[in-house]
Every structure is written in structure tokens, then in C-alpha cells.
Length: 214
Image (cartoon, rainbow, N blue to C red; front, side, top):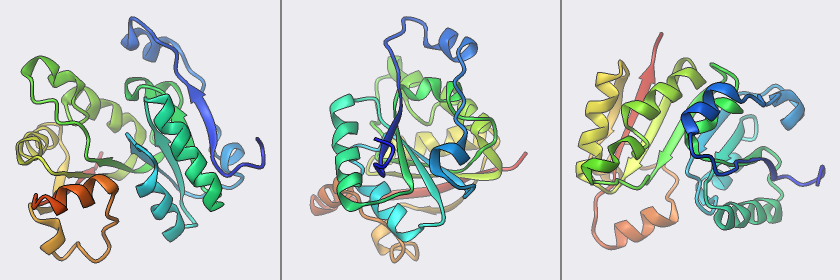
């Protein structure tokens, strides 16, 4: 396992009180030991089958990437794809995003990617949205000063919600577009499988970058 490019660093166990777990349990990663170098680290929350991060890691070999995915079967597929491609700078965490602080040192992440997170439009599920105040407070503890969150979504309603949440949480929002594929940011964009499907259906893709400056 030590020779595999993609290593499962942690697997979270079901917990009736995730808040309590995040406050009391710590198994902080030593990035130098995990990756074998001291390159900057970026994080994707909800990596799915790993297509985005695999391509990102190919393009940026001097950056290390952590991928978080709750579904075990899905994260195993992502790991298999990464290992088959021989990508050395990706590692995986099979845990709920609520307990990221159990494993990641404070102010150690340069950028967080939120690609096509489930919108969860029901009001009763707002706290589960990955751009709710609950999660933005977690991201603040993880990001380096000046760190960024890049979000993409096909849901205009979720995008509007996210914009308001970022601003309310004190982030500066930039590079906002409601039609990514016809914007100045299209050339460098990595098209995910979800994204390709949504685009084929004629749905425009929304994108923003939120900057956390302490």
C-alpha cells in the first residue's frame, strides 16, 4: 500500500454527534509524511469518482491534493482510477466533511474545490449544504490567509444562496460567472463528468471564487 499513488488516509465511523467528534477527536495529518514533500496542499470536498482531481493533479504536479468523499464505494473507484493513472500527488479521506478539522491542521489548505455539490433546496436541510455558514466556518479554520474556495454548480438558486453565504461570512467573492463555458475562465476549466452532462442538457454552469483574508 505504501507504493500506491492513492492512499486512503482516514475512514470515518458513523457518529450520532459529529459536532462532538470534531471538537474532541484529533488525528492531524503530517503532510510531509503523507506526500513525501512540503508542497502546498489543496482540497476537494465531495470528489465523486475523482475525475476532476485526477486531471488537476496531472496539470499541477507541484501541488498536493486531498480528496474527501463520504460514499465508500465511490471513493474506492476514485482511488482505483488514480492508482491506474500513476498519479502520485493525491490522497483520499473517506469521512464526513463535518469532521475535516479532526484530520487537517489549521490554516494548512491553499484552496478548496466544491464541484457540483448537492443543492439540498429543502429549508430543513440548509445546514447540510456545503456552502452554509456551518461549513464556511469549518473552511475558515482550514484555509491559509488569502486561501480560496472555488465553487461550480448547475443550480442558479444554489449559486445565489452560496453568494449570499460567502459574503455574510466575510469572504471576498470574485471571478463570478453564470455561464462558465462562455466566459473568460473557460479555457482553464476542467470539465467534470457531471458538468459535461449538465452542459449537454443546455444548462449553463455557474462559477465563483471566494477569498478568505484574515
